[in-house]
Amino acid sequence: MELMTAYPRHRVRSVQMLDGVWDFVYLGDDADLAALSTDALRFGERAAVPSVYDASPAYAGRRGTAVYRTFVASTPGTRARVHFHGLGLWCRVLVDGQAVAENSLPYSGFWADVPPAEQPLRELLVVVDNRFDPERVPLFEQFFDFYAYGGIYRSVEWHEVAPVCIERARVTTLDLSDGTIQVDVTLNGQDLPQSIDITTSIDGGESATWRDCKVVDGAARLQLRVPEPTLWSPSTPNLHTIQVAIEGDDIVERFGLRTVAASEHEILLNGEPVKLLGYCRHEAHPQFGPALPHAQLVQDLQLLRDLGCNFVRGSHYPQDPRFLDLCDELGFLVWEESLGWGQKAAHFERQSFCDAQVEQTTLMVRNSANHPCVIMWGFLNEGESNSEASVPLYTRLVETIRELDPTRLVTYATNRPFNDLNLALVDVVSVNCYPGWYASHDADPRPLGDVVPHIHRLLAHMAEQGLGDKPFILSEIGAGAIYGWRDPLAAHWSEGYQADYLELVCREAVTNDRVNGLALWQFCDCRTYASPRALGRPRAFNNKGTLDEYRRPKQAYETAKQVFRTGRRELGSTHSPK
Ligand code: ADA
Picture 1 (tube, rainbow, N blue to C red):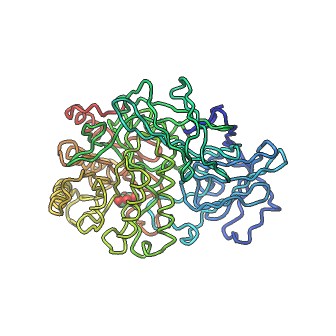
Picture 2: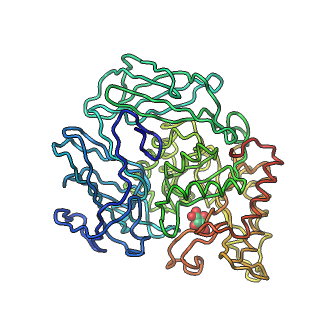
Picture 3: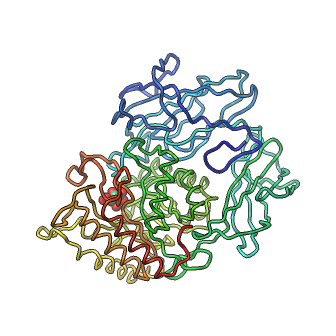
């Protein structure tokens, strides 16, 4: 049985995919969550799962509490685990009236453990709340420049599991040349054994049994060889699978054999320099918010491939695992980051905020570790990284990531490059900047002359600071354009200004050896808040997409495509997606 929409999958374990249509009730904008009773709710409506209620016509823009309900046929006396692939902003999960989990980490994949019961039909309720509350939901606040939706963003699965089951089997490439891998099998359950028998099968081939594997800190470690190893790269995105089984349970993980490293001035993939060319992308659509249909994920990657890109920065939160699966299959390189946007010193001084950051970052690394497409971890987009108060949290996050995963690069996007205090900590220096867009030349309708000199200033500054040997990524740069606005002056907000702007930026990124990566801001327009920045965000959208929110290309689409594609040919890179 392999019904799941994303890896890992299971063949032995019984898994029910709960996506579909559930009962639904909206409780209003002022429910008291502490006193909330779910006993006598009247579910008068239906809602799709996944979906967000505040993008739907009935509850557009509302901030409040909603309850989703479904019933699950379950084997009496068997424990279960509900796998949520991501929701927001906050939820409480109840099974048969008992609260089994709460979660306040928007976009994170997490599990709710369900004790066994005798009844064969179990009621699953998910209370979701999308009100801003920095105490309850420390990671998402209203000042962010993208919309905070309420609902079940991604798939939900019901797993029936043995008392001791497998949480994950994490695969690490040890030797590319002979396909040696390390597999860390993490177990889940009340009483974990001291040792365990494990059976493995790679690519559906012959099984091998490993007797009495020592369980240390809840995990057993194996070292084995992929019988017919093939390298993963953007141009040859070969994938392998491993089924790992213990008594009464199994997991099928998919992985790729590849290495990533940062050497002087370069990002190395499988030992060869690679230039990252692509976009920052929000998981967003006007009708679905972040609950994107699978078809949209595929279409977005078709467009990115057509544009000649090999790189996506998953801005600004842990990614949909279905999207990462597709990136694995198609050969895109991904920067994944935990949720953050412009947090200030006061945030870094709050313990609950820091702990939530670390918790979400930890979950992200654990959840995505087997995706070969993910080559870089990030966090705290545009945090106040020039404040002394930032240093302990930035240090803690870098250390946490390195301890969990020493095989990938660590970075974060700074918009304070000239006085940032944390850049020495990371493998890759990544800078967000908008020269020529947020410009201060009152009289110049087209301050394009600001763009390239600014990039050169950034590079010179990094060299002066002794950071010149680290790879350098332009992690955001761009200009806004309103779809359809063609202006004879080609001034700000016109498709023409954006096209000219992106042409300069793309050329610079392609031709300048010191620029190792470019993630243009942004792939498509996305909804944000009007009130605090009404003049800068016409339509209450961030309009810097090369495509609009319905993925209709603006003029810059052809421009960027032309430069990326020619550039890639000139670079002679084999690192283009398949
Ligand atoms: C920042 C931020 C983006 C977006 C962008 C903009 O760099 O990281 O999320 O808000 O600015 O459009 O100004």
